[in-house]
Image 1 (cartoon, each protein chain N blue to C red):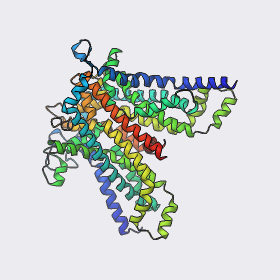
Image 2: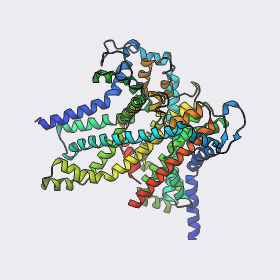
Image 3: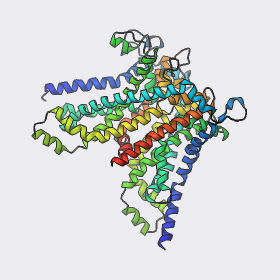
Image 4: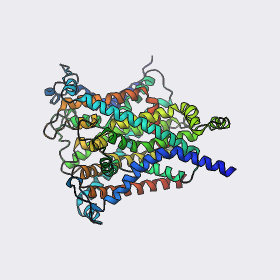
Amino acid sequence: MKLSIRTLIISILTFMILGITLFPILWMFSSSLKPEGTILSTSTIWIPKKITLTNYKDLFNRFHFQKYLLNSIIIAVSTTIISIMFGVVAAYGFSRYNFPGSSKLLFLVILVRLFTPAALVIPLYGMLDWLGLSDTLLSIIIGVTALNLPFVIFMMKAFFDDFPKELEEAAKVDGMSPFRTLVTIVIPLSMPAIVTVALFSFSLGWNDFLFGLSFSQTIKSMPVTVAIASMDTGFKIYWGAMMAGGTVLSIPILLITLIFQKYFVRGISAGALKQ
Amino acid sequence: MISKIKQIEQRTGFFLTLPGVLFLLSFIIYPLLSNVFISFYDYNPLHLREMIFIGFKNYQCLFREPIFRYSLFITTSFTLVSVTLELFVGLSISIFFATFIKEKSQGILKWLYRGATSILIMPWAIPGISAAVAWRLLFHPLYSPINAVLGKQIMWLSTPLLAFFSIVIADVWKCTPYFIFFFIAGIISIPPAQFEAAKIDGASGWQEIRYIILPNLLPVIIVASSFRAIDSFTKIFDMVYVLTGGGPGTATKVIPLLIQETGLKFFRFGLASAMAVVTVLISISFGVELLRRRKASQ
């Protein structure tokens, strides 16, 4: 193989860009394998001489990470399921039927993107408290889903608008109800779009910090993100556990992203390009 | 007969959208409207007292106390600085990678390109809190590896200006991939015939960028930066919370953090709601203006 100078320069530049990209993540990971005392050191050590899993063990033995992880999983999975259930059906309705107010409702859906989520937190807090949901996983799920649902409707509607209508018309002639057409014909053929939307919903639920921080008070409903942030107590920062926690938190998302990269990239650009 | 079918269709559509719309009405529209209501009251849920109607006093308070104005200013500056940087860095990297794509590269470069896209997406994908704690360690006042590389002792998070730029740096790292993937998608969709024509005319690489890539990419650049600007203004939270907590003092107290703290740390619900109302109005008018311009340009 011929290795031209041009190829060499491009390769070096690429490695520099990738190096900067990976640097914080790798540094976090490398630090999580160091004993607590050596994380903060004036010499830059990439591969610790003594690799230790103490920080990870601490997460589970001292910081009850198993409970926080379970909370985060429940939040992410429920957000995904509820968003998909409500969002796909609503998007189909918006895409196929013209009823009074449907155009205005969609405008509303777009506008929701413009709110700062923090504006939602205060009234929602009072409302969920009144419903007896304070310090529950459900309160966080409701918050995240409320923020996510407009996005799901928006994306799925764009997809359904391009979906060929002939199949549905055939089903209609055969006397199939709209709901059955949706479930047995449209949804199975929409799987790529639904996977994209599901991935985004899951990561929104998994990554959520704002609602978790605002609504949960005890370990009962606290997600991993809030638990990690609280390792900085104001007096002492548990660096080892914090870096291990940050690593554990990012692993599922990194795996999902790498496996479903195609869908993920599509989701980034499709949301804005298709309007 | 036709009108009856139409009526049934309308009803079907209505029922399909009903669950989703009800959810949005009760957990987005209603809370946002009740913000307006709460903002006219003095309301502290911890004091177990009734809500006291105080008219516009919360709003007066907002514009009398400098913190809210300052917070608007710092959030806007943050949005402008970080989105501009992300745009330029993202554009440069995408054009750089476009050289791979354009040539339908073989061998090493092809693998490099594939690996690069998988790695470049990582900062954008990882949870905000993971990124934030990673940067928290990188900005450590005494043991920052960045300082070791630079050979200088920079106290990253300790002065207002440095704290601001630390958050910008971390945000640029995290959000530039968003632009990169937009732009690479945009560059791929440029008809290859344009590049071939340019080659025949003997255009230089710089001319290709100037007269083919940039003009073709302009709509994508506008869309991506406005979306990113809105997201940056309304959703910056995790990074600031972990890196500076809004400090030093209130130097980096961005709007979302200010609202959240006023409401749920100091439990001044009325004041927090007034802040939320003003902020939502600002971002909506920005967004509506944007939508109108896009419609006008189409």
